[in-house]
Amino acid sequence: MVFRRIFTIFLLIASPLALADMIDASLNNNAAAFKFSTGAGALVQGNSDIQLGVLYNDSMNNMGEVGMLVKGEEGDASGATLAVGVKALVGMIKNYIPGTTENVGAVVIGGELAYAFPAAKQLSAAIDYFAGPKITSFGDCNRANLWAIHADYEVSPGTKVYVEHREANFGITNTGVTATLDAGTYLGVKLTF
Image: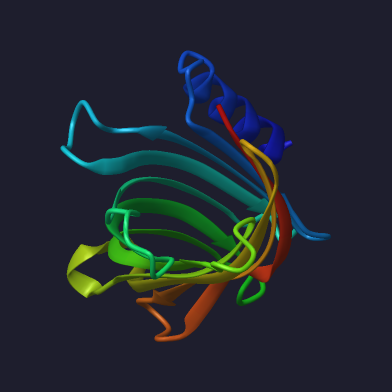
């Protein structure tokens, strides 16, 4: 039920933006995540994207995010690309201690280091890391860490499939424990328009 509401809100946000640059859907046995990304050239000079995303898992944890990622130029022959950015996160962690619900949020900064293999241009890999300290965390948390590592393959122009392991962790203020909102390996598809 909650997943339907989150997905409906996501579609309502994304639907007016019919000229979307990318839609990303990823699933595993316990969770679903959806992300929408569009170019932010009107706001920031350079190669930048605005991203909106939602995540829901079978523990009834959920997270929403909005952020901006600015990518370096892709013109060099090394195959490496660096991107930096900022995200605002809000989420709910249920039952990390039985009977508890923690409402978490943070502003995190970080980036992505990606590498496109020169010998196989359709294949690439990347690692992402975003962190938010106590000063930018709110609700029931005092820190946030998100990280992911993935490999993708371009099936055709505008369509990529990927496998990714990602984790979202929040330090809970009143217990001092690090609670995992989501952790797992996902299969996904990215559609670029």
